Length: 375
Image 1: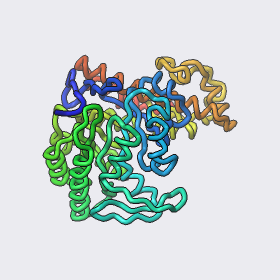
Image 2 (image 1 turned 120 degrees about the vertical axis):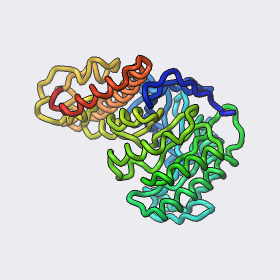
Image 3 (image 1 turned 120 degrees about the horizontal axis):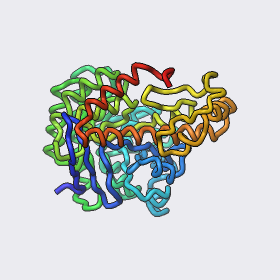
């Protein structure tokens, strides 16, 4: 039996809304998970993340194992206690960061040996060690199997070899994880842009048996249209009764189109990263708050959001803070962006439940076509 119950409440075409039940609280889907890379969602208090509407956040295995150290987090009470977040936490496996950040890495059947990007210290990450860090030391509610991130573009033979390695690592991850009633494990579908490899990966992972299924190897340079094509040929092969998680994605339009293709969960650093660089996200796209047209604009960024950063501060004040390089500007825009992304998923949940998702989708595209100058 799956560790966590996933109740689908409504469907509208391929779009789905439901609830993933966990011992630490329900996760309403579609769900956006703010990224708490180093045991913090950058520039926000945990209470602000929850107030913005997040049911779950993501922690990063690679960064936490290097600093402050997974064993230290365990000694300090586990990740939830350490960062004062009492809701569910999903941790990634660390594989993507090893691939993207490490100066030197050596991939073998056993795992990946790498040097830390912080101090050059040597480490070995295996499927078993990744599960130990995530489930046993950090105490994640949802852990991810260790996988190899397949780059884009990628020749078919290389994509096949990478996918098959990830599947074998998935089997070892599952064996290391065992049977747990209060924690869940997700497998990761790979296969680059090749339909048959994606299907083979999905079928292999289903045979192993996971509590949920993630779609990896996207948001690595393939572009929006290719991402949609890969989802078109991948989600139909994933179990209807289990949650589907698109890793590392993305922009609001990406979320809308992925939900239209049956995806339930997302994570991305974009809201807080954009906030630190003076961008506010809206249905019309990203707004550059540094622009001179906001210098005397007394309107709030978005008074439809139940978020103080969106509702209670003028665009002129936000413009001033960003121009002046004040920390508060990054904090407020990050808070607004997280609230916007959470509100977007809430509106999609409501539209699916009402059988009006296609109308919502069309309206969203129309606003995107107008562009940020329209607001």
